Image 1: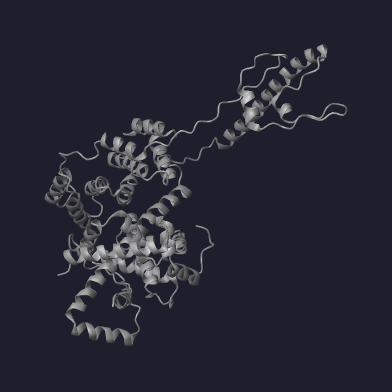
Image 2: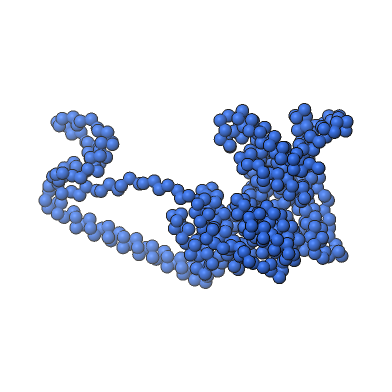
Length: 328
Length: 189
């Protein structure tokens, strides 16, 4: 029967099957009630698909921004000195190249002279030579090549005798793998240290329903995020351009763990200019993307760069510190 | 962004197929600059802002996706024409809703687009369903998203890192039952 209900709910029955099933439902109240639950389930799962697609669109929107726009916060100005800039750059590269060539040339000439004067045969002591002994006619066959790890060991051992003063190049220490930072903990710390929403904030004059905003703020402050979100969505429906409600809703979602759902609201705030709420949104967005690391590294970097490019940005110091913590 | 977009047939086929193909097809539509401009122009000419245009564009894509998946779009018009039709219809709906809260220019002559054959979940019902979903765990939500998009059990097992498709099937069954239980106790009146 479950399959049959599923088929009906998913609109996969033909006309005959459908009318027969509906006749059956009309006779059996229990069946009709079960179908109602399945229909609600179908709609709920559709909501999940919708939420998933909304998140994807939010990411595509960022991709469009990245492809088309200059780095956020930096306006493109056509400079009259653009050609001069390129010419000077080319000249600088040329000069650097010449200087580099001169430096390379000079020490070689100094080193070559004493070697030629002494005519001392060099011993095959360098690592590359010892690893690849060249067979010479008349000489005993070279011993089979030793394992690479052993050679590595010999190389790292300090020389006891130095028959030739040739400097053995120091092998750089093996790179140590640095564990990635705990992104969640970092985001939580930075978020908690920022006062995004003032607990005593009063609704702006533009807010058409100040009382509702006050209730939403109370719910938010007391941790009743679901209730707060419901009220704020009603407010935004009435006045979609109201900044204060949007900001509170974004942080309500964020604090209830729905970081990804908060992103579209924050993006809209961040894109609204360079006022305080937009700057707060920049920083909150960086933290929301930090929550989604490593998947959202590009977007996190983009927002950190935006903040760091503006020394007057409200969160410049925090963003710099976070970039340092992340090793960016 | 480039001119190399999928054909209508390829688009609808990919969306019906689901999975990565669906995602690529939807992205293809989303990145069509011409489509964005058409919607933007319409919204700006009909009392909306740029932000409204973006919201409407996104909502139209959600509706288009659903229409194609449910077989409501029959290919009698071009996908782009259908999409713009949805966007226009949606904008009219939004304006009507806003008029309940603010003064709506009743004299405005607005060319009402035909209502597309889609079932949009009403706001009140949406809130109830969302509350029910909030009671589900994150893993269940992810699994049911794939399930609704017709991913095979093999694909679900792979995505969710289950041992095999049988485990995925059992989990899907469990999650669906859980969701129906929540819905039964919470919403059915």
